[in-house]
Length: 79
Length: 491
Image 1 (cartoon, one colour):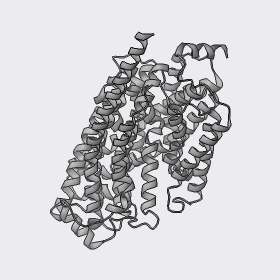
Image 2: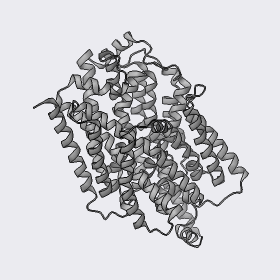
Image 3: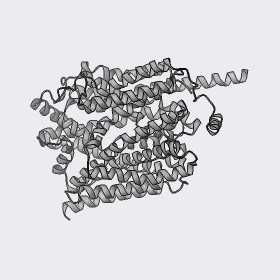
Image 4: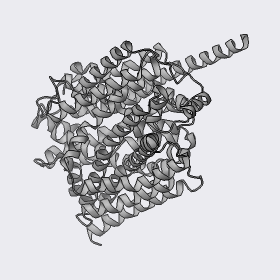
């Protein structure tokens, strides 16, 4: 079984910073953006940006898994 | 035709067609335990996506979320945040759970604990706790469905009749086709839900205010603090928000039915891809909130916020449209209910009854028992929904915080070789006891933090300390499946 890579975990922590820990920074009504109060705009924006972050994590993770598999095969051949 | 008759025929037509699709979904497959519970591990990305979206967006998303927006305001933001972040979290352990599940042929969450910790008592305990929290969740779906159908048929069908009819259908398609039925009905449900959310989420603010921006301007002018935390509450501030989002996003996939949905996937990468695109489904939630916010100014003073969405839709749209909303709402209850029933039945039959009472049962006998239990569990939930009991309401408050206490056992089970069953057991029991105490004695939030989150922290710390104090155990995930089967026989 593969543990997730640190790099992928790091990328996944970005949406957590943006939508969870930083609430004190964006819990406000003004300015309105695109007709939405700021906090709601911020959350909606991150609903859309999160898949973007995660597709980066996906690339890192699949490359990581592929590298591990190659490593395993290599070991098996040497043995 | 009379309004009530129109709405009723639309609701009944859609629900009946969906149930027929569900019944049909399993007919091409022989329904053994593996097919019935995890669809033979054959779902690609699209079906896994539909299944999970189908399970996740329950009557709470429909009535509860708009109700929170209506009555509490700002704190409701947590729902959009945790639904998005739960998928982020899933990226880092669902593929691993799938891999282990495939290796050992797991079908339930308890199977995971059974294999990793080699303790049938721990596994049986986990399955019982799971079932105990599933029943009130199921009852909530039933009650929600009753309200939706009663209101949207203009009182043409009573609450109880609606619940009886809908749940007879649910029991029938779960019995016949298992998890395949749930996935295929989700196709119809998701489509209707999307349509409904876009139509009313954008339509209602336009109808009453001339646009979403104008609606918000009017709302902020009338109630300047409604949209900021703690909204209309006094206790739901920033520390509550952070601890609640953490608890619910980390604990999301600890629900037994969501956990075992991972086993239906074809490969671990299916689940990774799924985790990437799932957050996009959350985009329907802001639209549901817009309805709740619009309702504040249009239909003020409702005693029950949960009725805000239906009340404003009923007074704004023609009967046939109300029928569609009613049908979407009914399916939003039926799909999650179906998977909850399936998960509870399998957990009880396989991980409690077989483990503790009748170890000689074959998989086929377990499958038969589980299918019989579908009917029993449906009847229990119906009984509670009709003669609604307050104990059950309390259990529901505990649900999320309760199941999240499985997290240390799962995460350490996957990633920490030194964890022991004593550690996991101690943490789990203490976590559940603590959360039960805090919630039932009305001390949630506790000092500004979500009580479940505090219990989870205690649970994690205890699991670490007790594990380090007890003797190291073998990681049974590293054994090969054949040898463990032999050990089981000789024991």
